[in-house]
Length: 577
Image 1 (tube, rainbow, N blue to C red):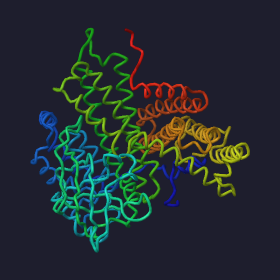
Image 2 (cartoon, rainbow, N blue to C red):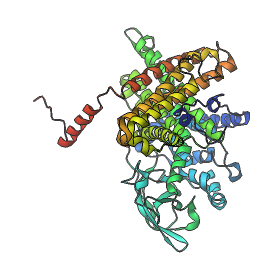
Image 3 (cartoon, one colour):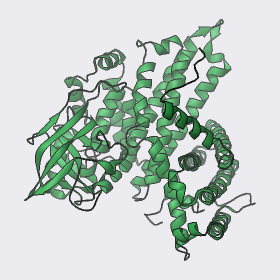
Image 4 (cartoon, rainbow, N blue to C red):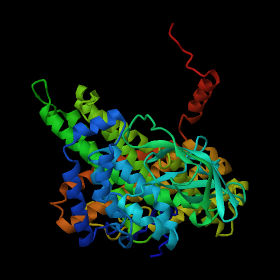
């Protein structure tokens, strides 16, 4: 199959690329052996240190001896090739390692994750042989810790709006600007810095900046809501002279570098979410068995079982989703940006729900700092914000789909502009085209659809997916028909389309995972996994239908009107007295 193929982008055009997701990815024996060693080392080092984690959190500081332990464990070398002294992990092994680390403490996990997922990722992806030989050995040992310096006071999700500027001066670049909320900022010696460079408006360039360069300073440790022990600071760049040889990638192509870094590193964040969810399930099940109300353990109450059951479903599905994306990366597929964005949104929101429900199940204990629930809740809240806010990623997911539909139609001799200028004729073409594609792929009215490699035991859930594909095509058509060229500003509509896509990809990943389990272990051994699939498929069906129905029948304008009213008054006006 073409390595440029994207499962979700193809799905939006009516094609179910089954070979991309079936069979479910599985690690080689060598990779499994490496992981077993890493997991055992992490358990020996970090298990049973809950009092220390609480202490670090309250103090807002990760002790230097802990960072040294991380270096000795090789936690800064996970993805660095073996030739440079690293462990050479692929995306799947790296994600699994961060999953294990996140079971213990979020601040420790983010310190290691920020180093590998984003801090030095540009060097791995775009670095020259000379750059890699110079810096990777030091980054592997932790002699240098890495940080990713993109965010600025006025440029968060809008990465193209950065103000930090780099001006060419002979064989050097002179950089001036300030970076905000930089993870590892206080302990890093290697910074991947993005700055505006000469050329057309909006162009930027990625640079390697090291702490020993004159003019590089960092601010005090930020006092944060969560991940308090991890280092987060500002980074100030005052006439910093950076040699041209420190440019990462091409001059003027910094935005491309940044987006590739964020896409490539998202399986690490997803792995961390999974680890935290597994830890929460362990805490909650033990708590519910030990805590008694009305003369019996609360584990016997239906509402407690409902919480735990949903936590299990969402953990399993998240693990399937993140593992599938990592598998695509490891197989060499190049176009996985939409899938990676979906995995980030889904994983971070599932973890947030799990943390909230775990705290609720713990009752008063959950609210007390003596127990880990409130710390985990605070730690995981940032996940929905950094590495691309979930709101922005939803727009990216949906608009990519609609852009692909427009491009495909253009290949039939219609420009997107022309279609929008003649909506009656143009959208008829979209509708006819979308329905034809879906009919070719899933077989409208047929029972079995396009899937041919799935076990018959999960055929009912596969049909729910295929129905969802038809809803996705219809939703894309209907949204474009309704909004035309103004779709860019219709964020309620694009969010609904994104939510349909997110649910469908999560269901596809779960189908693949359960299918592999059934084929490997037999239906009886995989029975509980099949129950997970049944529950999640039902949820997807209900949510997808609801999102589709709300394209036309919704209260969007009323909600916006109320928001405008609050903005105009800058307050809530209906006091009772």
